Image (cartoon, rainbow, N blue to C red):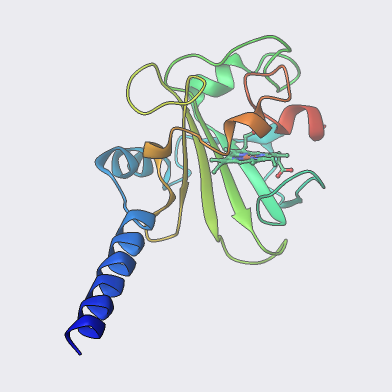
Amino acid sequence: MIKSTTIFLFTLLSFSLLITSCSKTTDEDKSLYEKVKSDAGFTFYKNNTTILQSSASSPHNAYFRMRYNSIAINAMTDNGKLPVGGSFPEGSLVVKELYDSPTGSLKLLAVMEKASQGSTGAGWKWAEYANDGKAAYSVAKKGEGCVSCHSTNSRDYNAVFNLFP
Ligand code: HEC
């Protein structure tokens, strides 16, 4: 009896630890979310607000649209894209709004912030946020699982430019 109670409590503890570690939203997550939660001050890719279908190689939701802050936009001098071999300046914010249908509501924000300080992977902070601002993917993970797939292009880890005209 004592033994099964101990096992039960231990299992409960392991589960609660697992759940808190998965859903942890850090201060870094919160401050980045504040910068990206509204589209005020952002410019949509090619000034187009249409929700597009994701590429076949994408693991993200089926539909998306892109917005960039002014620091990022100013570097996008190759017909509205970052030039091949170029790099975004510090403070650039790249926000991918994710949808499940072309007319549906926003599901997630996938975010990259060019940063030399803090939790970075390949010079970027990587995050995903639910609509309530909770981190679906925390900056603390330093782009683990994101960077390798995003490194298959020569436009500073940004995949959209080569895949979408
Ligand atoms: C298997 C490959 C793959 C993985 C893994 C991946 N992405 Fe992406 N990502 C893409 C592709 C492809 C696009 C281009 C748009 C599309 O088709 O969805 C993209 C676009 C983006 C964009 C828009 C900027 C751009 O042009 O690249 C952001 C932001 C982003 N991903 C964030 C993330 C984050 C954060 C993670 C990790 C949690 C991640 N991605 C993991 C393939 C990947």
